[in-house]
Length: 316
Image 1 (cartoon, helix red, strand yellow):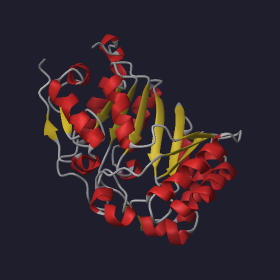
Image 2 (cartoon, helix red, strand yellow; image 1 turned 90 degrees about the horizontal axis):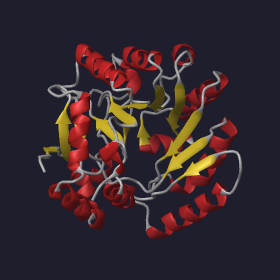
Image 3 (cartoon, one colour; image 1 turned 30 degrees about the horizontal axis):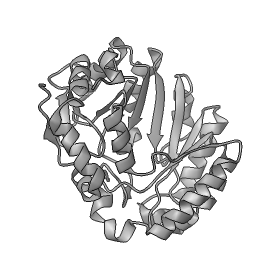
Image 4 (cartoon, helix red, strand yellow; image 1 turned 120 degrees about the vertical axis):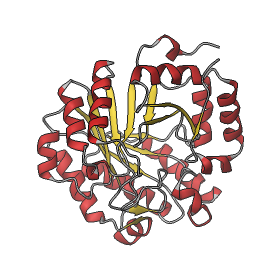
């Protein structure tokens, strides 16, 4: 079976997790990030510069910088400037705690496709219960600062048993703040969330109410609501049929085949980005990966092992 990506010389998107370090300790974090949790082998400044240069050379059109919290990475500004000054569209995924006017002043000189701020609650009590150490006021202030700077604002909402009752309020808040899009979907059973699944997973009725809310709100003009595919399993099923033209780069330079799977197809410390892209394309033709994706589609518990990375042989 051939895929669209088989004919492409480069990914359309590189999603680059710059660090596992973060200034919050969120209960639902799929990357298991938290304060002081940087990986011991994260890319050095020179290695990050080399990866950024390869992204530019390969003419990747779109890069998402995320984490952990990308703004705590010592390489964040240099990487963003290197990519942006080459004309690459950037998405910055942040919790908003450090996103202020000085940061936005230099970000607005770059081709920013969007800045995405997480709003996992509409009251400090609920938000702080899920995003440990976080200030909802700071997140709201960051959203306003993004819009005031003339940059496109996205909002994301990760539903859990702790905050799903505030979903409607978060959607209203996102509209008021001037977001052009809100992204959501079922809570991912990956990383920290998998460890706390018993206390975080919404029940079927809560999800039914949330889906009905999203369908109603999607008809309201002015802000796009993105919530399909709704579950990780649905996303994996779609990827197995037509793999996305995306490379997911971990803070230590390893390249994952999919967020919900543990398989690693390349190591940017020892391979070029072009070689990693070739390995990624081959990966989706291997029986081992297709079997792993099939198992994870039908058995959600397997998502909890997505961060137990393992090398995939991509020789077919």
